[in-house]
Length: 305
Image 1 (cartoon, rainbow, N blue to C red):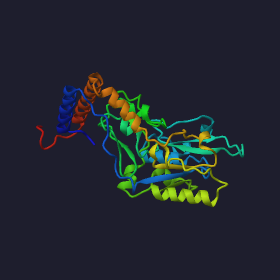
Image 2: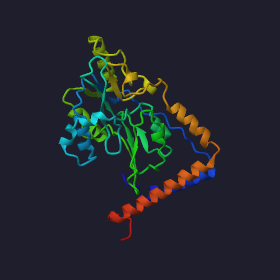
Image 3: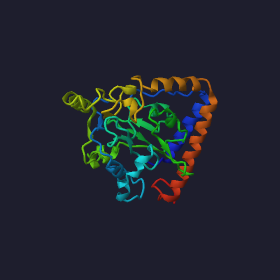
């Protein structure tokens, strides 16, 4: 969504007020009701490392011009990969303690945390946790502070360092438009040929995961990763190996925003310079973006030609 002049003037006024007051409020309002939120259950015991999820994500989000055949390359498993600005999800191969000939594959992407640290750390509200479960990002609000990258316990958000003028923070979008406006499943889920990915309501996925563990206990570790970690995540995992040996970090059940917000309160309560710095940076970036959009947009009814 493009920012208009009225919003720019409002932002400038709000920024000036913050500078005069010298007191930035870092706490976020109470999050949305997630009782009916969506989620994805990743059953790593069924993942075959085909990389079809990567291909679907790449096509749906128009990340690169790579052909479909590029995602058939299995040599990538020689290196450990992380999501980046042009790859919202990646699959890695891990050693299988039960069978060295058959590695264990783990898909990695934004976990869309219920109480997301990135949302809490963002001082301008560019990131938002929606009631559908997705953590969305608005590049027009972003000032490039990259606090979200520091706060994320999964080290997921990436930055477009190669984009000098309009860099964005990039991460999995949970295919928000697909699941809300188009009533579709996320592209990675739709492309998975082995049903390693299941999309649905988060509470129902937890029930499904428990049923799987109960039905074949020899197949799974008795742990649903993401059910309670850092307050819960939209993406849930089942595994045949201990999660301490997986792609996922060992985390407490306490939501991280409780820590990030207390730190922000301590920094910003009586300390004006950070507010001034990021407020001015934000105004400069917004004015530059507006000037750029004005050069390309036709005049509105309220503008002089």
